Image (cartoon, rainbow, N blue to C red; front, side, top):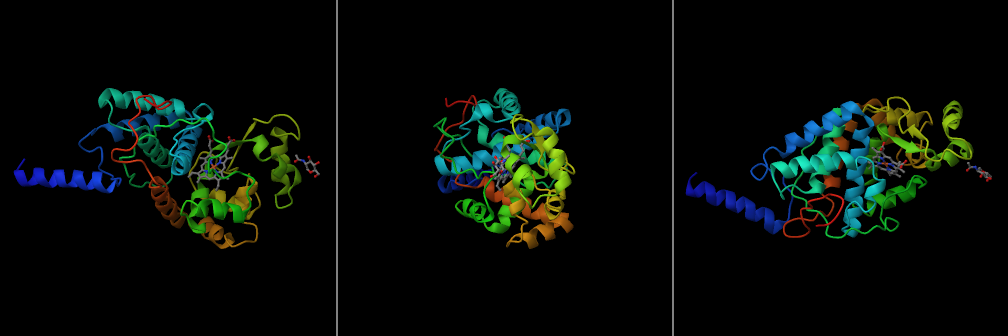
Length: 300
Ligand code: HEM
Ligand SMILES: *[C@@H]1O[C@H](CO)[C@@H](O)[C@H](O)[C@H]1NC(C)=O
């Protein structure tokens, strides 16, 4: 390599460190096999159990929103599904490149690869995040939105993180995959009026008015294991599972965007991918902040 190209590479490295920015080529020289290793593990996990892809996507959402507010990654690790897969990937990647790839980056790439494996869009994941050095077990004060929020509160919750209401709707399309527990939508299926009555009835079979709190139902009743735009079509026919889901199509300001996505999968794909890139850039730890965890469940 010539002197000038070495100088050029050093300069790129310095820019990265000085500005604290993420870059899609962060591991290109530091751990060239990292991304393929993550993709292979995600594909194998999703082939075995499609819902695992949903859990990995949700994990990334948690990490971005919680980390952005508290600099605390994975605070409630034990209750977060998908962490086994992350642990497995982490040990593979540690074997290949010890101490190089952060848990936060593994989760970000695994989320993207999950979406792709289930039929959704791809995007270039910005890398170089570092892991937090705090591991609070207190999730109560995190900024995660809850499933009983109404439209205004959802818009506020996302706008507190710098997202527009358009991005809220696009990101909510993640509920085209995965499942939720009965106790989180019980009130909706028994007491709300903007719900399709046969849909509500069929859910009540697996989610009675008392008991069965942890019984699961798909967030997208039509195609629970495919990343498509059925979630938005469901909202149009009052088949949103959470109160918060149905709020996006309940006579308010976001109805028209739900209509657009329900007829235009390509637009949803593009908007979702762009919003995911933005989500991944929420106030990450970079440069000399934070650490590269050895075990994703705890600080070094
Ligand atoms: C708009 C506000 C949102 C609310 C109120 C919300 C709430 C929830 C809740 C309460 C669950 C079910 C948890 C359980 O039963 O334990 C869930 C599941 C899920 N959420 Fe969200 N979420 C929101 C936005 C998002 C975003 C932005 C993403 C990702 C980009 C996402 C991805 C998922 C996925 C994939 C699942 C299924 C997980 C699985 O099957 O294991 N959600 N969400
Ligand atoms: C439905 O509403 C009634 C009356 O407010 C209440 O007593 C009941 O607990 C509610 N049921 C559910 C499942 O939330």
